Amino acid sequence: MKPSLVDILEPRLTVLDLDHRLKLARELVPGRIVFTTSFGIEDQLVTHSIFTQGLEIDIVTIDTGRLFPETIDLWERTEARYARRVTAVYPQAQPLEELVAEQGINGFYRSVENRKACCHVRKVEPLSRLLSGASAWVTGLRADQSQERGKVRLAELDAGHKLLKVNPLADYTRDAIVAAVEEFSVPINELHGRGFLSIGCAPCTRAVEPGEPERAGRWWWESEEKKECGLHVSETGELRRGPAPERPR
Ligand code: SF4
Image (cartoon, rainbow, N blue to C red; front, side):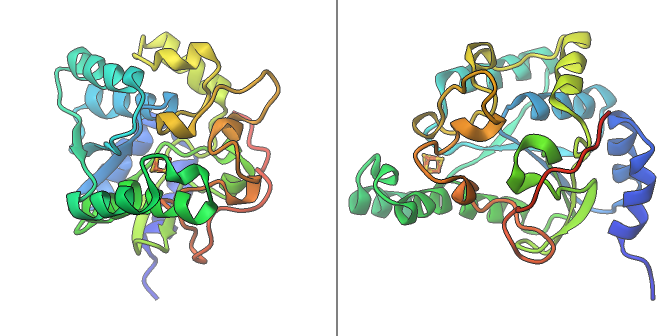
């Protein structure tokens, strides 16, 4: 049986650094590759690598309409720094109007179902359109970000989108990311300095206390096991579960 791109990529990526991982993925994967950024610190490092190497990888964000002003500011600063555009995909107008009419502008606080419906309209559906026709999806996921992301691998099949997914920072620690963005003067979100480690939509993200898990500030009113937005689905079709493996770097 012919080996899949996942089987080919995974062992080769393991021994490379970020720049060479992205370069190799671009060399081995034909067709359109999309990197989705939410302008978090990991995403900024991946953006830096793609732009400075001039790789043909589209960098796209999902503008949910509820982003922090600081995130929008970073978007603009990123384009200015690299003289390149970060394009955007938006929720469809009619489903969004219906959602807000049905549950109210902040209806996601009232139930997990409402929250998932909002994430679906504002994030999941736009992502599906964005990835349609792509050959691969690059993300800034790290395995030690949370229990839900503990099984993230360098290359894997995303069951939800039936697409090769490359996570070139899967085995990086947050400290390694912070050191790299400082070394290369990569622009980052001002909110990181105010205790926001993981940054999503403004009404659904709070700062975390010292010692709290990185993603504790996301959908903080919900229990831990419900905290994913449906964007990332494992090869078995499950949302990310399981303990983060120890992968010091
Ligand atoms: S994170 Fe919050 S505001 Fe953003 S799409 Fe999900 S529920 Fe809606």
